[in-house]
Length: 221
Image 1 (cartoon, one colour):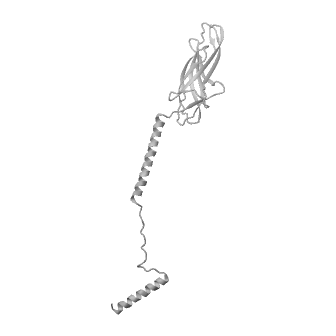
Image 2 (cartoon, rainbow, N blue to C red):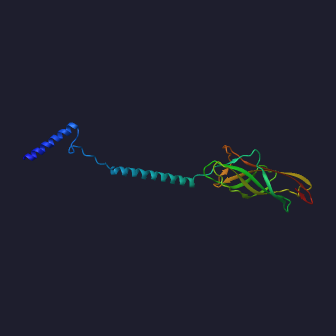
Image 3 (cartoon, rainbow, N blue to C red):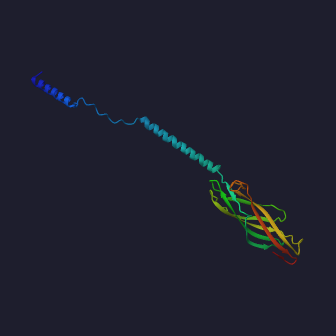
């Protein structure tokens, strides 16, 4: 080894000793800087699988709810009872050729739908409570207003009522024609609306009275 190389080696040795006394670590002995670790590929696969399964479950639940709502969910319409019989308004009246009284009437009753799915009153019919006077009643109109959840909605029902007077057998007499009827209504699914908002059975009653005077020459209401 030449003298020049010996001197160089000696200088490096002294330099290392000085660095060791100062606490410095030579560049050749410093630990390598760790490189950034990228996420493992299977982590992405697991996350994607979880998202796919969650979306599938949500889609299935929404589809099942849609099928139930379309095919099985029904309105639950209740009658809101009045303190007395439902008020009847007379639109028009006349006497026909046989001496019978013909009245064009209107009845308004209130209903509430306690189900989320809306519905409406689709059909109505009158049922007599007494046979004292049996009129001929024809429903002419039903207000098919949508009944939504928890809304109190009046429904108008119009009808023509023909009251027989039997004028031939009751000439020159004064009669009181008393009519007591129960109105049965049905919703758009065909279910009878016969419960009150508190769950008890309820009926829509109509009372109608008319005093008539029957004479041989004419008939006066």
